[in-house]
Length: 152
Ligand code: CA2
Image (cartoon, rainbow, N blue to C red; front, side, top):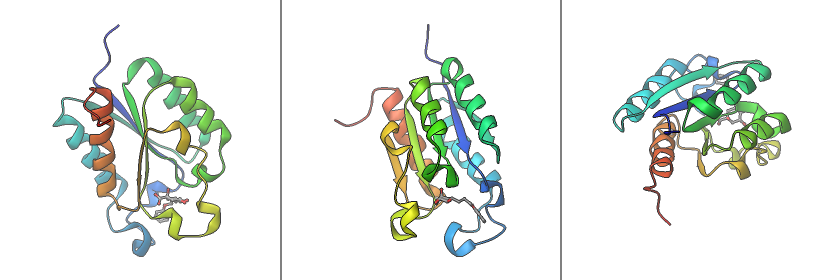
């Protein structure tokens, strides 16, 4: 089977609020800006993007499961589920696709409960605290892994 030239972009709970509140932490860009940025960066490398954002964990799990056969990798900002969700971690681990974990803010400089990620050790790429542009860097790095262009 050939690898699909498609990525899944997942944004977790509350990320639909991007650009509407807390600009000091998350900036002024909206979720639509994030999805466009990732789609454009992926398109420049010949990949399309399926984007999902949900405030419901099961919706995210279903999208991740569908990606198993339909996508080549996953870019994910799990939002607060990063710090709480074993089931999200199990879903990512279960589909055996390369995963890029993105956080807009620097979680390591925030409250202690944000310092642990259940997703971190199932992800091959980690981009933390680079704002929305971090999604573009994560997308490029993930495509490097998929196409065998990663360092090391
Ligand atoms: O820095 C990130 O990207 C986070 O994943 C964002 C999560 C937070 O729980 C993580 O610790 C770090 C929160 C997403 C909520 O996003 C909002 C955006 C604008 C206004 C309110 C919430």
